[in-house]
Image 1 (cartoon, rainbow, N blue to C red):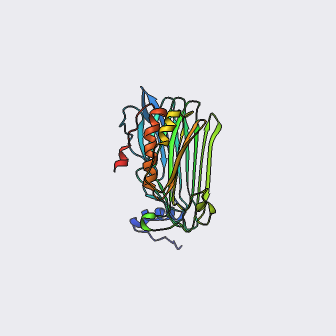
Image 2 (tube, rainbow, N blue to C red):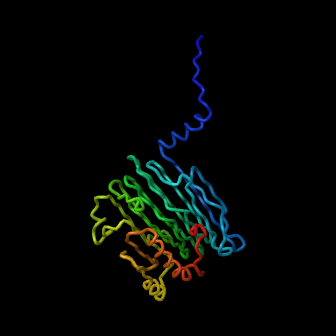
Length: 296
């Protein structure tokens, strides 16, 4: 009887083969975080992750609250076929600030969509701040960003998103690809904010005066914390930039929002951080203290 045996691969090739297969199909990464309040201190009560999406050790530069966390995607960029999912649950009386260590790079898709899904639930008397670094959309990238926020009656959410179309530092323009973005916020299951964007390089929205006005960077800041006090809104309106960018703030029932359309992601972040320093004593009952990772 003839017995046919398969050749044994060197151990390095045995290890690399699953990784190569993963690269061919895309990374499927998820991270779930549950924050709770224990003895008047917010702790990370539970975390569960799959694939390359993790959180660093929780820090407390402001005392017991809020807990500061840094969300890390170790590959450093998101390629076509990759799917990232972040789920955050804030239990009653808890408070957290989450950010990222650097820009999220969205690589050329090679015909496959890359996606990021964020679902955040904030319970009674709780606050969540989601303040990531910018998204850089490479030429040829096909990107879908979806963020859903669920708030209880008196919960607070503050977050921003900055997007740069093309790698401006290397002179790259965004000439092909697709970018989708959606943010929805519900309070007690009632929709209070819904924002959707669908962009392609040939979209009239990129050049329209009602759109991006031929600028390559855009961003928004949203705070859901009830009606914005008139004096806070006035202070925010007085924040200016020495820039050609278009920017401004507005207040709606239960929502404060700010916009930036301009040439520079760093400038957008500076503007939003100035607003954050102005807004946080109102919605967070404390002065704004920058996450340590922003200084590196």
